[in-house]
Image 1 (tube, one colour):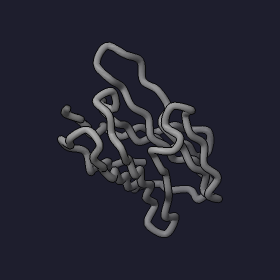
Image 2 (cartoon, rainbow, N blue to C red):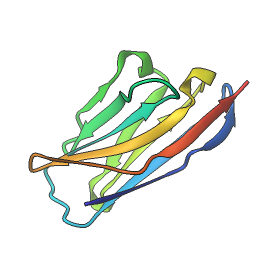
Image 3 (tube, helix red, strand yellow):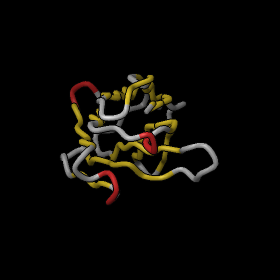
Image 4 (spheres, rainbow, N blue to C red):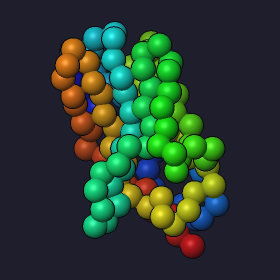
Length: 114
C-alpha cells in the first residue's frame, strides 16, 4: 500500500489548508485512515482518523478547527484545517491501517507564519 499526501504549504495564521491523501496498491475496504503530525523536536501525534464507515476521531486540541473526511470510492482521506495557528506548523503524515497492517505516507509540510 502506498500513501501519497499533498496540500501542505505556507499559510498565514488564521488561514486554511486542505490536505489530501490517496491510497493505492493492495487496498482493502475495511480500514482506518488518519492524519498525524510531528512538529520539530516533538513526538508524532494524532490529529484525526476516520473509519471506512465514516466514524471520526479527533485529538482534543484539534476539535473545532480541523475536519477529517473520506471518499471510499477514491481511497482518499482529507483534512480541512481552519483557523491555523503557528503551533500547527509540522509535517503531517497520512496513515492507513488495514488487515492488521499499518502504512505511512512520507508527509507533507505545513508551515504557519505569523
